[in-house]
Image 1: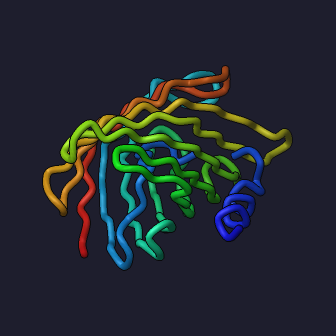
Image 2: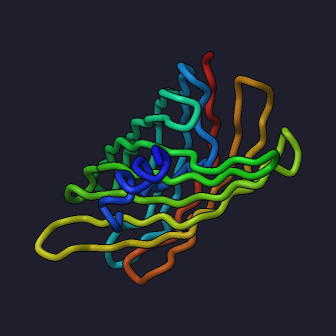
Length: 186
């Protein structure tokens, strides 16, 4: 019952992005994650093309819950600032399912909602995919949908290196690619 209540609370925005760096596995309890990545945006009529620089910090609240603070600097546009909560609602030996929900400030204030699936081929490599939704509130409600595809490499207990491509799933979204690293401090 507790899982269902938490899941419903996270889904309340009902439409809402992690932008880049999507992992289905939550951080260990009391662990801190710090990461950075250059981000390339292909751009479209809604967003200028170019490079951005992404940094984030996360904290493991519970085995199934973590919080993440994000900042992306875009020289060609407004910066992205966000905070989200991730809930791991199913885990097996090699698979993880989670939902991430949060708030951000980009062009306008918005909600984020992401559902993720991760498959661990081996301890040192995993693949993730999901659906990432942004909803921004301005004169109209803007909805952007992406399909994040991520391959990650565990280089030990303290370092995770990844490559992520966000495939646009509607006309308001655009292609994004990120290559980066996360450091885990226990």
